[in-house]
Image (tube, rainbow, N blue to C red; front, side, top):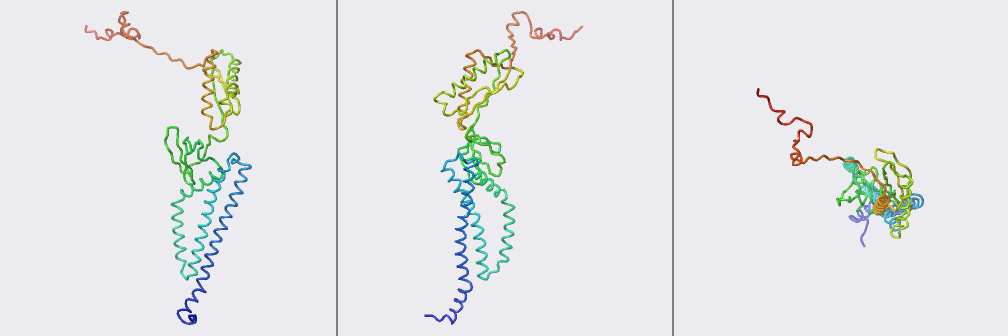
Length: 318
């Protein structure tokens, strides 16, 4: 058995007692702190989502969607906290090993300032993405309007949102650019239709026709599960230049708003036409001139238009 009072064993034992044991303790405490941080973040996220599911916009989410949101927020929050724990532990270990951490701290400060200025847009994207997820503003598969773009959300993460518009174009929108997010497929939507009829039309008859179409539409076996509120005439919307405008409102399931709206308009047009209800439109008069017909009548184009003929424009040579 070696004599630890002799060199180099005495130096090794002194180093182990003064530096190695504290370093091992720091590592153990760091591992425990990272685990506790993960549990702490999970508890906060669960409490927030439970309240949101009870009182907020997450009431209509399924258990799978809630779990996906919780996992994402868990990962984000835990990684941020654990990063700071690791940085602090590394600095403490360097100090225990007798290294001068003053220059390292100064270097970290300079790097931090540089990264802070250069990555503030990236940080804004991630923070805004976390808020979008936490507040359930939209999710994958929703039809949204973000940053002036309408389309279906094909992919979403904390940094960016991928939207495909009706033309099939894929737009990648940084989450930091999303100031207002309009979700077009959240629970329910309206059939909001204006119809203008000509002056002199029996308005009561028009209202009756529209309401009958709405009742027939909402009782149709194909559409009744999609219609939440029967479309009907809400009010006289305007008395305009071409006729009287009536406002038609109804409620449908949000994903069905385009299909249901198109079907309702199709039935409404057929019903109005069947009952002889005229939908006014601007009149356009087109004048056409047939040169052969004018020649047969012995007229020139200039004479018809009231202008001088070619002979009238000839200079008098006398």
